[in-house]
Image (tube, rainbow, N blue to C red):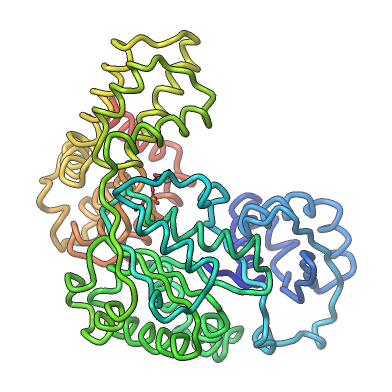
Length: 445
Ligand code: ADP
Ligand code: MG
């Protein structure tokens, strides 16, 4: 995701408001406005000297913590100053900004930590060559596809992390198509702070040397957004900028994505990632065990690599569970223990934690018919359990907002709203919160 400093600050204010409660927030921070960002320092204006001093003494540390969290950058700080109202400036008057935050880039997603095998070797080599030299016509655009949990995000973030570390003069934009949609929709809403929001949204992309779009399959069915993406894509492409796209399926299966986008994708390099073979799974397991500081017998490691094979995320999940067991019990695990932990883990993820089973558990809990949760009724007795189901799916499965939405015949923004709603209801009502916690536990046992 790409964030401008003012986006980072806005998100940080949102979180501060939740933490402080709106009363305190309104007294001190409601007039805070972004002024500038230079060399890691945010300058924030407040409407009086007293406020600026008070906020500096009482909230600076917390706000810096939040800024670090949101920006993913450990080196940021903040200064509060008094800015008279008459001096307030428009926020969008500076179009040539290059500080693009890369929240959601995981520092561990680097090439060195990506285990190669016959299943992913070509994808790895191509991603690396693109990171070293952008815009070569044979590898532009680069299209990487493969099933869930096979390392697509890791690989394309490795490109971004490489650029971040080695080419600070180059800007990149890493964004998932879901976030692209969200930002696009936000930019379409005019308000006094973001007149020309759509233009500035486009500018952010036009300025990137690398555009990395993760999970492009979710642009299907979204014509206006596809249109915009196509134009941004062409504009960058014609100027020799590198484009990297991932998807869960090959370009020709992306219908109903616009034909012209599909043929653009096909015009560059298309590579796939397949599930890892046993040897690769062993190597990935060993790396993960080293990370977690866990020593397991060879036969246990072998057992895991043979049993957990559908994807790498699942393999990591199994190790996390084993690590947790070792920490709790403080003993070495036997093959028998690991076998039962793994069987339960695999069973739970396939048996219980899928959209249908979550929905029916929620329906049972609220004594409603599970089919009505997938229907259109907006009565509160139906709406709330439906929203809870969405919330729990997002929490307990790897499904994206889009995938959850499609289960209910709705779009990703409905799911996002449901999650927000449940979060705020839980914050307001401890009884309700207890109910959700119980439900969640009942799904996990
Ligand atoms: P995808 O985007 O394809 O769904 P991810 O990139 O999110 O998959 O990968 C899931 C997890 O598995 C991540 O934690 C990632 O680091 C790990 N992973 C996947 N493939 C490899 C690999 N070849 N070597 C090391 N870790 C991997
Ligand atoms: Mg991914």
